[in-house]
Length: 166
Image (cartoon, rainbow, N blue to C red; front, side, top):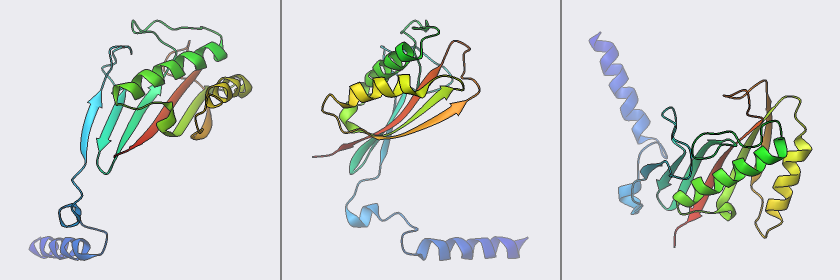
């Protein structure tokens, strides 16, 4: 048992001395990242998730939980209409971004979960219209799923945004 602990300790020491394996933030003058969890009032309250997470460092990174077509009272908007649900999910995404001091122009990645059988063209039409408003589009991945967390949901949008620090 003692031998295993010594070997493990030596392994950790070796790992910590490898270039790129240790925290060099103090030496380089880069502050350690700080994390803030956000649940803006414009979005429905969800005990099982955080709506957005902001990571402060050399850049601010915001990780946005999957947004659905719901109002602040958790009522589904656009039941049966994937285009309307996409528009509402994007509106909720904007609320989550704004809570972290970001906008659509800061998006770098979106994952769109679409219930199998729903036409992606209707989502793409909404996205193209949104990106044509002078915003560089982020990377986008569509994932077809058998169902989402509520049977009325047809689409969910998860995103990551990066805000450069001045």
